[in-house]
Image (cartoon, rainbow, N blue to C red):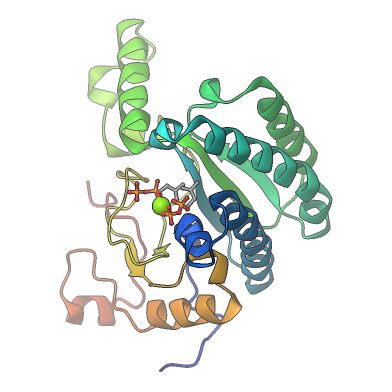
Length: 256
Ligand code: IPE
Ligand code: IPE
Ligand code: MG
């Protein structure tokens, strides 16, 4: 296995934090206990990514489809989220982390939105890692939302039909100004995307581990990063082209 080098770490890491429920079930505990343990992993991984100099960390915390879970679990998750965000502001300030949320915030309870606004406002001046939580997030919903906004702006003459290209479309997504993820980690052994960042993941390196999220730790993160560093990102080119040109940068739309 390669040694971890600080130079070739992903600029943007995205994570599908999965397996809290199974972690709890294996221990005859309630699912919510798994979520509580999962929050501890979030703290640990956020801190470690910030320490390693990762610029963007995006965590899938609650999907648009997760609203369909039993009411008691949804309620417990919302309470946990509120508590987590509120309690993390001080630590984010200490670590120079900027906080951000993507997703359909209109679906979230008012009190959570208030805490989110507060965390965003308080950390807005920080210049370190951008921590984005995907909450009530679904990629198809995000793409449809963008298409609708583009249609509105085209109809009102704010943009011309000829202006519509991949760059403009990206600007209408929730992830405006965030570069596409270089690396995606999904825990718990599931090998699917589950409606996460469908547009943005076009050329992302994917990594799946059987470890459940509550058991994921710094060593598992280092293992994942070592795997990332062993990969060759070609973006459609040949291996020779990429090696001559040095490190390929993840902007696949540049030539268009
Ligand atoms: C991930 O863990 C957390 C959320 C989706 C909120 P799960 O709750 O999906 O855990 P499993 O997949 O049931 O084990
Ligand atoms: C994806 O996990 C969503 C989050 C991690 C927040 P799920 O557990 O909801 O995904 P599926 O249902 O197994 O695809
Ligand atoms: Mg799951």
